[in-house]
Length: 222
Image 1 (cartoon, rainbow, N blue to C red):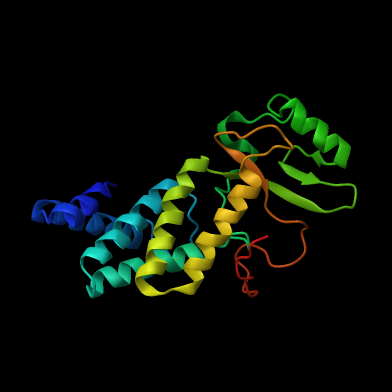
Image 2: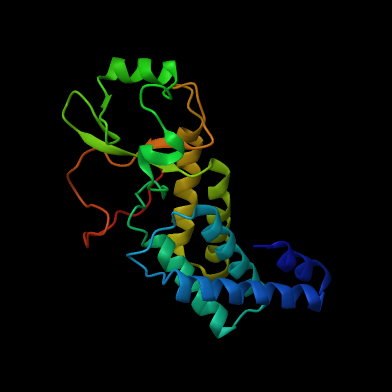
């Protein structure tokens, strides 16, 4: 997705760039509605960069063509899919739910020694299915945060959408993820920041689960 077409139009007024951006938005509309059948509350953004880039293109185009009903509807669909992602947690973290099977991950071979030492000290164990547990009996799955750079697209799109529409939920989402990233993605404790960073999805198996109808907490700064 070439969001540069939108930028070029906004900077120069080039009609060719605007038409190219419109073509991209039409492709994204077909992808989300016909190919992926994206459904708020059921669909995830596991294709992190693909979703984020598309949402950003649509939001930028909406900036260039305010009041366009078809664009408003497509942008709203992107917004709702993101906000109602079953895997989204209160920190603004939407993981690629691919677990330890990603890239041939081996729990014996691929854990850095510093991370293993931390897990041993905290009494954290990983089973063969990729679930972790601690000494207090809490359990959570390993989930992957698709390449940390990939999320920049989704955050930029959410932030721009919030600025254009006044959407407080999208503003909260972008803020919460920024705070989450600053606190957790560069791990001083575990001495690592992988291309794919595994994160705790939940503190226990109790409470709302993906796909449930339980109220979702608003993203928070913690």
